[in-house]
Image 1 (tube, rainbow, N blue to C red):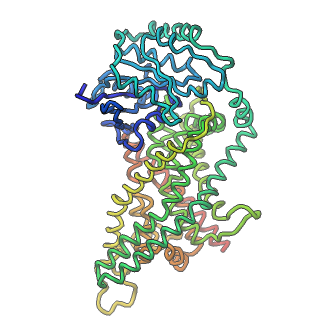
Image 2 (cartoon, one colour; image 1 turned 90 degrees about the horizontal axis):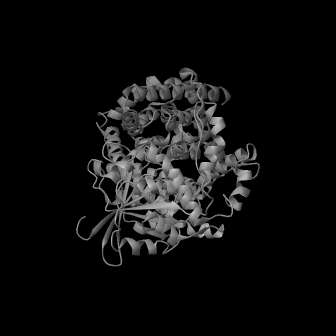
Image 3 (cartoon, rainbow, N blue to C red; image 1 turned 90 degrees about the vertical axis):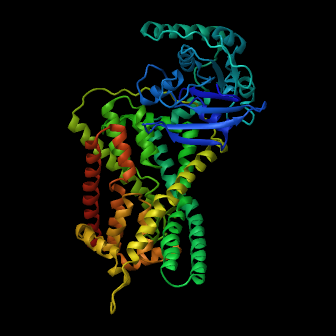
Length: 611
């Protein structure tokens, strides 16, 4: 090992509290990237132990077994064995186990032990185990396993103190490496039963509270009603909590942009700052609070243990349209961004189910669409109360999300009919105990997502915003020109060229032009419209400008377009990497373009007839 630095790998089954333990040890000192050559997330953090020793901690993907059936588990095994290119083997493995469910977790621990590397077992969630009356003879378990066993409570302050003290000492001696074959894996079950019988006393298999809540949450009728209500309230909250903060940011950028315009001389520099940078970035940044509100609820539901139950509940319904309950969590992740959703399909072992989930994931309403939705809904949908309690704007947002889900189910149903697969795809999954989400873990999740958004804002979105400003500003109008200056610019010519394609669905040339940068990043449609209509940094002025130039039918058509529109370039790149097929990329882009065009055409024609 390197002098003074100990490389530690955290491993464990999903839902064992491994990530919470990683967050407690490393806090904000984390670096998130991807493993070389794949889109699987790699999280690494650093922690200085009381002795002054540097601990370099790698949070490996969750795994149930090394009998590898998914890319996640294969990477975890390769890293632990020292066979992953460019990744040094760990000096110490910390295997995290849920103390309330040792039957499943001990089997994986025994597989880790057979790799022949130093191992420490972290018995996590010990507080929950004690509340349920579970008694674990830790000294006897340690003696039988032949490795250190430490109690942890990852969600409590100083809950990892014992683990830090143990890893800060001498590295334990590794057990001899053992062969991995069918016969040895069969022996693991008998070994686990013997360990449980000798060291664990459990009054009941599941917690009483879990059973009580599950009678309602997993009910085939009431459970679906509860899930629908939860998701409905989430989208209402996006407007109720996020909109005031968004307006505050927008007003602040408008004030700042106005003051800068006074100090800057008239000309290209003033236009770049006020219309380009503040008009684009300021408008997009104003929607960050609404995005974070949505992320907050997704993270809270994930931390509470509810999401796996929702997957179980929806399995039968999703199976009827060519998907399974395994698809639920990747698809839910796609509401934040389709890229991690597509990456999350690695846990789906059936290749047909995985491909179907990959192709429909972009139909989930990702957070990049939210700025477009928020802008158009605020500009064209009045803030009325429905039934005296629901916000009409929130209802429209909910309908757009439902439209994406319905589209995904339709595509899944079509793919199922094309493949004509009659095989059973049984869902086997662990339902973790319910738990109160921890502020620290939710906060770290929100911080990571806000940083991703800010990097996009100051990277690709800034570049595209400046490009759109340049296209909208040059060349200057000729002498004697009577129309708006933008009509004579490069943007005007490009937009009018695309307008011929999109005129049947009600798009003017400004709307058509905004679709071009949106292909790189959907949020930039807002920045492009702000630049084209030259509203500066005042995001509050963009809505009235759109309402003055765009008919209601066209605005509704644009909303529907973004519900089904072809995904951004980054998503297409991930589809190529995950499926290793340009054919799948072409299918994904092609069917979404046709779907968006037809849906927008119907929306525009019906809305025009009614209005």
